[in-house]
Image 1: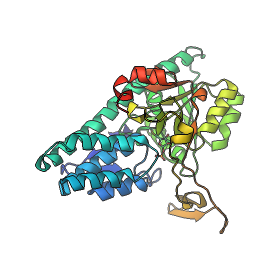
Image 2 (image 1 turned 90 degrees about the vertical axis):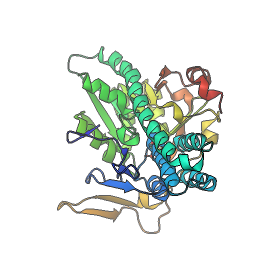
Image 3 (image 1 turned 180 degrees about the vertical axis):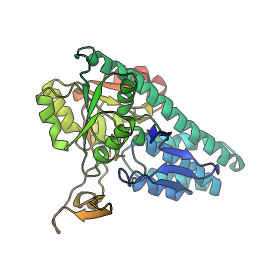
Image 4 (image 1 turned 135 degrees about the vertical axis):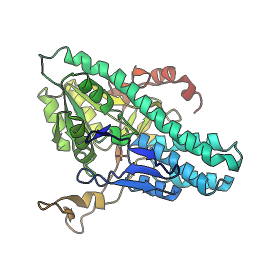
Length: 367
Ligand SMILES: CSC[C@H]1O[C@H](OP(=O)(O)O)[C@H](O)[C@@H]1O
């Protein structure tokens, strides 16, 4: 997507053909800083520190991390070690394991001398595939927005609520939940986005709002607790969120607070859609609430906030009393019964095993 008129992906191979460039998402929205990742360990640290974040982008970063590992040591032991290290960087997004499995499947049969070049080629394919998949997600999700737009008065926007950041910053490009929004906007369909700030890391306020602003999409940042009120007052036409892992039965794991939005949407008859690329489907599990591991992150993400002072300095301040106990669950699981549909690269599916297996037979058999 564009940043001040210049096209960017969220991650890319640098001109040196070895190191990997990535937007440091911890510095947005106040600073646009590009990080250079030069080793597999740095790729793992970029994922665990959330320099890069978002399920598809985590996968692409791990793929390049495997390539960096092979550049340094292409032995079988190094291939296994890099996979384990990267897989341990974050537990919830299944795209991480998917990408590592893809890389090891491509590299294990090769002679060590051929592995580095093959790894970079496969990592680039994974990144490019993500862009095309997300473009297709947008194409299929666009229909949902067009249907609602047809019921509106001329110029009246379709109001979409989203939670966290499932934008182009969470993927290699386009985003998942935002792809239909960008495509509707680019076609002149009036859209407005209610952006959940998404405590504690504020991915909505700091990332989604930044993205939408740079693309010229009208949006309003709201505290996380506002969505239910807006839905009660018919101010939300559609909710679209991303996901980090979908169980075979259609249960959806996403950023903490998604489940509460789905409950409010269900109670108010607001369509609640989840956008995802097929690598996010985990066909090996069929009960998301019981089987999807929920990451717990540092208390400091809750006790402290970072922002810009009136005179332009970036400062971090404490917002919780010393000594208070903190719980920081990163994700929750929305049961399939609360999901109106899954927007995938192969169409909009009902949130159930039959629909997922029918749309992706090649994946459902593997698991
Ligand atoms: C398109 S996947 C985006 C997904 O990932 C986010 O989590 P995090 O920012 O912690 O990586 C969030 O769950 C988004 O919906």
